[in-house]
Image (cartoon, rainbow, N blue to C red):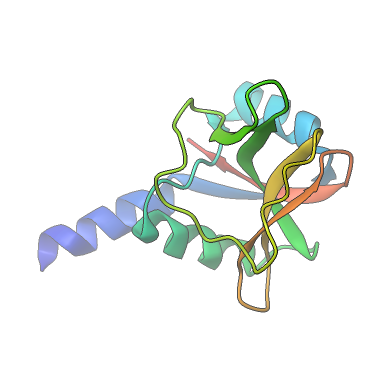
Length: 126
């Protein structure tokens, strides 16, 4: 039991909610300059901690490190991982160019495809 508690604490300590409203590209640049990257959610455990961070956001959604490739026609994480785990809201994801992934800060906290020009809070990993 001690080991799983340690793993949860380690994950939660590595996530930073930034309560600044930025476009997806601005959020990506900020995370890469000040921490490591926009968060990539590869497991249900990590999703749990991302949801906990998102609850404190000042915007309705929070940027994740999730992007749609128009050229290749698929969604991917900025850390180059494919989508092994997902938590999309009903009717999502769309396959629209210039859309990126965000999590709802409340109300179910599912992922949504949003225009990358929207200004939202975001979660960085460190």
